Image (tube, rainbow, N blue to C red; front, side):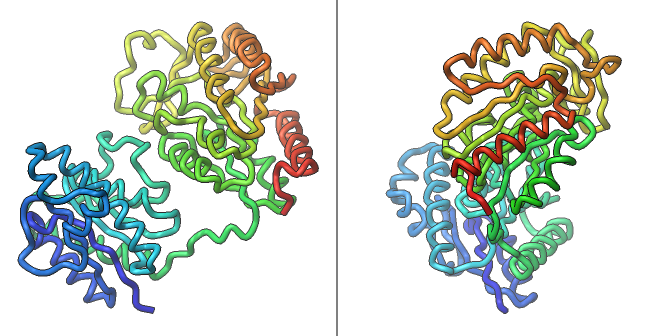
Length: 410
């Protein structure tokens, strides 16, 4: 079946590059649908969706954008129109996948367009800043794909063509092979920090699937939590089991390993029933190449691998975190159960391990219980988060919610 690809870019400054991409899509049997998001100039050849159509979707005119005299403000308005138009075209069934290219301006706009589309629609961004920390987690669609545009700032060249030809094949191949999520069974969204630090998913996954649920486990190293929050806020899950809050620690203390400032709020906003536990919230994760901040240099340290390393929190920092977690959970509009395992919240805080701190854990449990009083239903569990007893408490709560009709029964 022939697939149509929405191609987004500034045709006034990158027409040669876009034409090359379009040609490669056609050569592989695809049909391009072109959208121009230029502000100042015009392309030499006609496009399917011109810049006037795009900016009109945002209630503006090109003349108004030019009159602003400020490139950033003008392009932000163009981005708004592009996102609205992208979703509109998709709802009309006009395309099967999206690809956009650009530098920082084009990437900024492309991120909005990708976020406008539902999960399962192929969305590719060819960018000179792909993989850069300039792109915050909160800007990314849950399933966006990036391709680094080597040598692509201005004009065609062999390096640029190599990136663009691969991008054309990637988006068209994805459109042909895509299997959007069917959601035939209720989905439980779960978070974890790998399987060595937090082990509960190994016990819970088979138990939940045996009950008739699909289980999506998100790796809380920034991008995983971003995707989890986005889907939770959209109401994609029948129930949330958010047991790894390490990304919340990171965003509060300025680490690059972040899922964005809205961590631990998505399920609450959508009213999705949620079980929460403070897994791995006793450590701060840093990028492997980052220098450890001076205030953490004499703390217990765990080098997980060359990409990521962790330092431990003290009792005072954990007390402040306890209050922040409760404040976020208290705003939830749906049923919320907060579990507090009082014998440990990740593998490295067991006796003899580098992050073991019984005093700090005790302070955290006490502060959490105090802050939750009358605001959030909280249960202190006499176990470690990696013990079977923790999983048994979770399954018992789920079964109760199912019996009460709070969580749908498969």
